[in-house]
Amino acid sequence: MLRFSANLGFLWQELSLPDAIRAAKAAGFDAVECHYPYDTPPEAVREALGETGLAMLGLNTARGDVAAGDNGLAAIPGRQDEARGAIDQALDYAVTVGAQNVHVMAGKAEGEEARATFIANLRHACERAAAVGVTVLIEPLNRRDAPGYFLQTADQALDIISAVGTPNIKLMFDCYHLQIMQGDLTHRLQAHMAAIGHIQIAAVPDRREPDHGEIDYRYILRFLESLGYDRPIGAEYRPATTTDAGLAWLQAYR
Picture 1: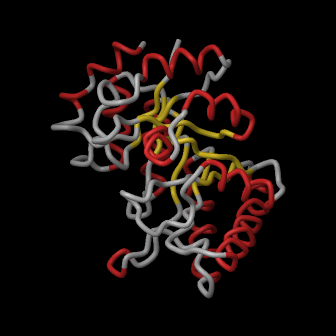
Picture 2: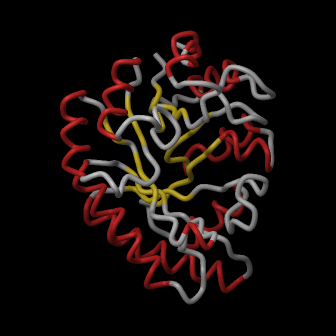
Picture 3: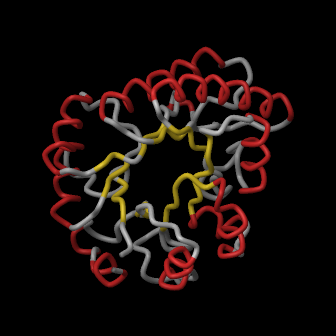
């Protein structure tokens, strides 16, 4: 049976993170994931996870100075100390709450120096993550939602993963972002499956519930089952109204 993870970076935003975890359990999700949990004591998150029996699949490194436009730090030359501080913070939080993955956010940058910076910071992340049993993820973001973001395609991500050269770095395959940037999702899923650490879904082009738009997720999800993919699929979408009002897709897809 298909399993789904609630991305609490977008879902149940009106609730505290521990209460959002409880809401995800009540709604029938099989796991949770989040974006930037750092304002919530990790002990409170761990308690809610233990109470519900849900796994925390992953969290993001901090974006940096959001007011200044930062959207991650790891590929920005000259900011390696900040980037590694964010990586260490994310890994420490992940260990405390039992999160399986940390998404290292590249930030806004371009060029060969940015690529070299990203690879060096990811090697730091992978070395630290290996010691605590955590997987490092990198995610291409589309240029409409994240203009100037360093990592924009699956091919670029695979090149970075190969250059880092460790077994604990994987691709976060967000169908929303990659449909906008490249399309041909089933071919890419099949071709890149060995490198994929997590898959996320949302409608294209509006990033709402994954039950309409230009991607037929019924087909995509059946295709993933045919490939033997059995991990929870991340529901990372912005609800059209409230989270609870838009959950009809969850039971329909099961």
